[in-house]
Length: 272
Image 1 (cartoon, rainbow, N blue to C red):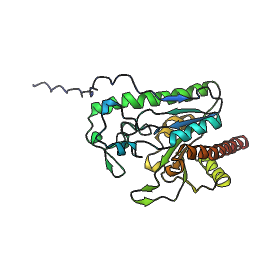
Image 2: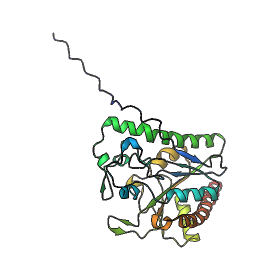
Image 3: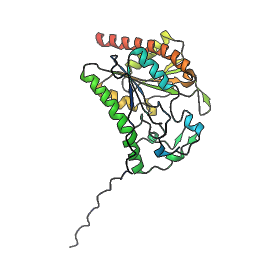
C-alpha cells in the first residue's frame, strides 16, 4: 500500500531586510491632563527613501492623496487649547495608511482619487509585511500604549481623530465644511455636531463626507470601541485650514465645540 503523500507546510512570506528603525509615531504634549487624545493618522506626506517617490510627481506628493493638508496644524492648535495629548503618524498614507487594517486595499492603495500610485501597483506579500512592520505596527502599538496608560491611572480618555478633505472630489464640489463621523457609538459625534450647530456657522453634518460604511473608522473601531471609550472622527474641508492663520482660527472654533460636546456626554453619563 502506497503511503499518502506528505502535505507541504505553507510558507510564511519572508520580509526583506528591516528598513532601518521602525517609523515611530510622534507624541506631543504627552503629560497633558485633559481627557481627549487627539489622533492624526494622515499628518505627513513624507515618503522615506526606502520607497523612493512611489512613481509620483512632486505635485502629487504634496496633494491630498498623500496626506491631509492642514490636519496637523489644526491638531496642534486643538492640543494647546484643550490641554490634550496629540499623536500623529510620520509617514505618508501612500506608504501605509494608519487608518486602515493590513488586509484593506486602502492600506497601501494602488489608486487614490483619480491618481494611479505606480509604486503600489504590485506589492508582494513580503513587501506588505515589511510596510506593516515598519509603519503600522509601531503606530498601533504607540496609540494603544497611550490609551492603556491613561486608563491605568483612571483617566479614561476620549478619542478624537482629525482629518481634512478636499473641496472637490471626482469633479464634484462638496457643500459640507465640517463632518463628524462615528463608528459603533454615536453619542460623542452627535454631541459634537449639536455643539457645532450652536457655536459656529459651519455647514456641519453627521457622517459626511464619509461614514463608517466607507471603511474610514478603523482607528476608532480597533482602539476606542473595545474599551468602550467615547470617540469621534472629525473631517474639516481643507480649504478652511489651508494657512496657519486659518488653522488657528478653526482651532478656536472647534476647541469650544469639543468642550461643549464633552460636557454633554458627561452629563448624559451622570443621568444614566
